[in-house]
Image 1 (cartoon, rainbow, N blue to C red):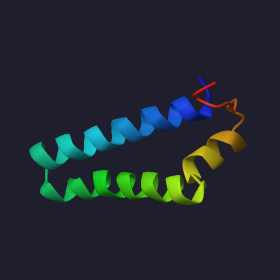
Image 2: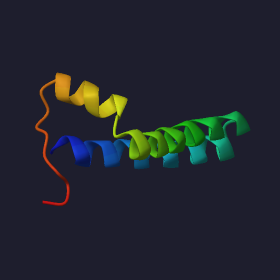
Image 3: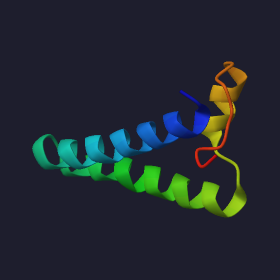
Length: 67
């Protein structure tokens, strides 16, 4: 797996987890989904993704998801 695929997997999983936890555990878990969404919007505008930065530092292969 490359960085782009891992980021998409992590973001989708965290959004779904936040929604499920807010429904079954406590309504404040919806903030998790909100923060993930805000980070996705920020990385789309600025081109900087903290998770991608950390994955690259950890040695995960970097390649475009659309190539």
